[in-house]
Length: 189
Image (tube, rainbow, N blue to C red; front, top):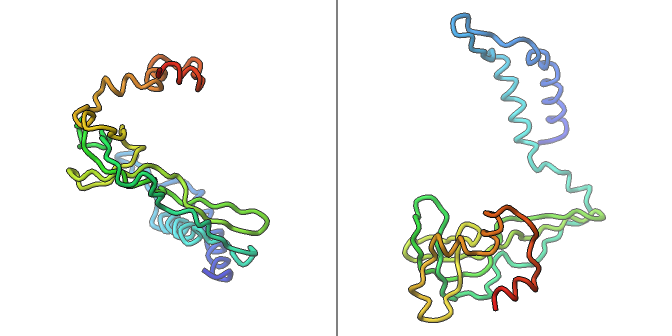
């Protein structure tokens, strides 16, 4: 949208602003308040204007646009067998076999400094392909762990397993003091 078009739209909205300030029409039988057609059109104009302005930044005022080359998918650990219990609706409490794909970016972040806009992949999270479901399940939407040996293949991730995770215990008991790394290491020995 060009500056002239934007100015014209804003001027038109300002002229009709008083219509939004007026009382709403009320149905005399139900008491239900309703916008008039003119008021509804004004609201829609504001919504349309905001939609058109979404990400409408004058990039000409910035000196440079850079893209951080950090990959969207970090494939370290790719192919490792894992067990995963999804938290998604409809997946139940079953523990599935999965294959770790790697850490996948879930969003794109940006930084603006000294006239330079830098975009980068961010919010990386383990991505696990679950063949039985034909889906990718992310670490943030599941309980999962690597399968280190053949004996671990049959170990399920149960409600009890989840309840025994140190931070789940802490949350259930009410957050007291957060354990130190040394205390966690000693507890794991």
